[in-house]
Length: 221
Image (cartoon, rainbow, N blue to C red; front, side, top):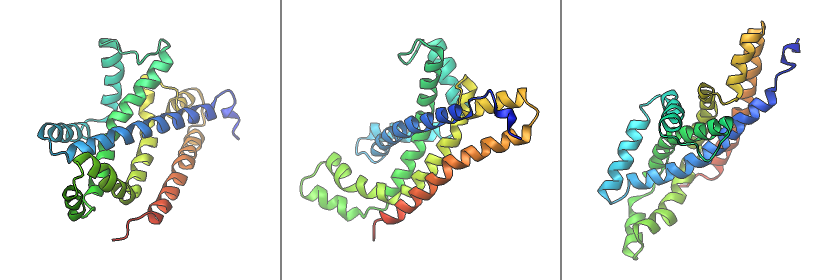
């Protein structure tokens, strides 16, 4: 029944999806946290940059961003991401595009978590002499992260599914292999079912685990 899978590296394609997701998630969390800090910064220039970045990037399709990273950065500006091999270069550019896009959503999730922290805590921190950076890192962000584990889980699940866009620049992840198999094999429904099941296996445990973790670590108000 599943003889059509012979000759195709399905596990390798999903492993590529996992690597795209993991690296993009780490990068998005770092860049998204910095953007969130900019959005609440007392410096108008930083606040304006964070606001403009989030509002612009969230309204650009991910496919456009990924293609820009490939056709724009690589072909026009010669950005190779430190790789000579075309496949490695495509992978790194895909990660860059996913980070740039997903960080905007991480930023908004974190900013909503910051809004749950009572204003009096920040005022008290300033009263005892803490700087903006110290207040943010020691008081606001730890509580904000605990408040938005659920929303961040949704962002991570969306990121896992968004990795399929990397197929547009030749990254051999799951969607790229599925397209190849559909072109070469006749079992279209079975192929679709196999890859749909694979993405469920990747995303469902993530949602369940992070949902449970969010309830355990929720800040009691």
